[in-house]
Length: 117
Image 1: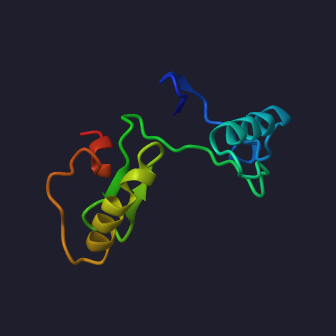
Image 2: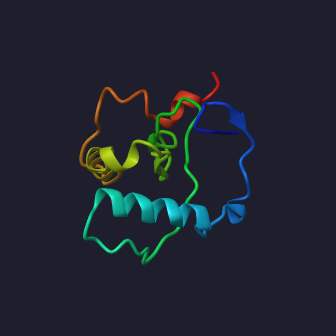
């Protein structure tokens, strides 16, 4: 189950069904906003795309090994936090996945928090 912006549960759509093209209304709104806030900038959209957000149930990403014997390292579910936290999470993921360092105090992002006991 995925979450909408309001936090309500809803079924995840088929990723292929996510609209990728901007609507005329979206183009008008972007053009209007750019014109208002960036005078002198040509408000022409050169390229656009849309991507579905990926969240976990608790809204924290997954960062860590699938389990102690796994060769699968997770670094996913960063929607809403991924961009602003990318350097930190990337540093942690690179060091842990390469076996250089294990970072303590990250139970809130570890995949095993979802395991049933």
